Length: 209
Image 1: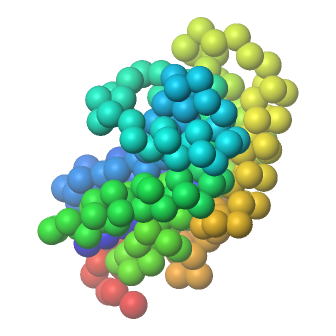
Image 2 (image 1 turned 90 degrees about the horizontal axis):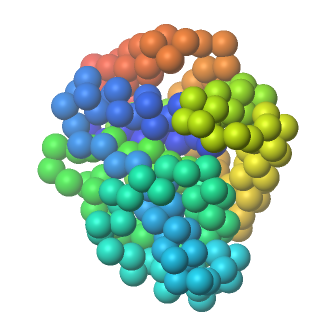
């Protein structure tokens, strides 16, 4: 069974993907982490993530980088969003994601283009979202909890900028697949969002379309 979980930044899709994986006993891949690694490696290389050649060179990052806490920094998320607009970068990471999705037994993947590009044949697809204001509120609270001093307005502006890049890029833009369940969790608790997602996947498994 392959489950695709897509959605914009700070929508909670990673939490939902991990919960689905735990519930069904499947491996999970946060594909955004691959792009964060590319963005961060570009910076380590003293390159520019807006430059296609610099970003492509950073795709040859060591696997050990995926465990670096710096990949979770807000600034690294912005680097990833900038690097991911380049078709060559997406092509370089494509097979890695496809192989993970098609492993024996299945998998759960979360990202921006899983249900549309990486695994269009997924058994269940979800598009997890929330309003930009709600996503900024959550991200701001998370950062404040980590001791990061940043204004809500700055976080909201970054959310809008990332959304524009992710939906506006020519190659594999952020889109809801036609057969994906829309899960807007703006007014939901984390537990309710997870429950709704698991119920949907369970129904798809029991009664596939």
